[in-house]
Image 1 (cartoon, one colour):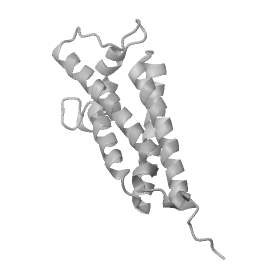
Image 2: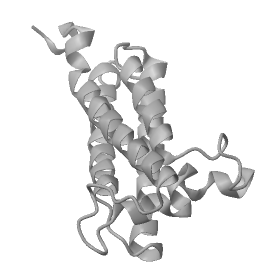
Image 3: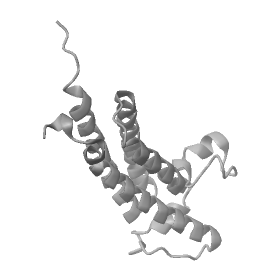
Image 4: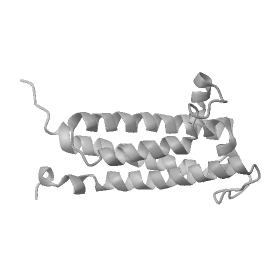
Length: 169
């Protein structure tokens, strides 16, 4: 079976596994955020030490809308300043559904979205390291996942479209 004969379901399976993993991490993140909203003394499973604390990171201003949406909409707007977990759930769900289709423009959109989220990971990683001075296990998992996600989407684009691009004379 040649590379171009691989069924859509098989060719996107790694991407779908990454999306499911991201979705599960985002659901856990959302669960922790909801618990923190109910009980300020809640301690997450991923709080391993004083400076290794997901709770401290999720409680920070950067735990909602990446700390960016509150600059635009204000911190009081809960609908326009959603927890990062909700944004992750929507992102991974959309990427999962779109992975079943092999449309060139959709693949380009996936590649751009993966690149933008990778830039967001660099931004959030910098905040984690230099502003919050914390280590968040969930955040680190997401950063690794997004690196793998970008590489997978980039490889998928190359496999499906880069080799088939017309060569100009």
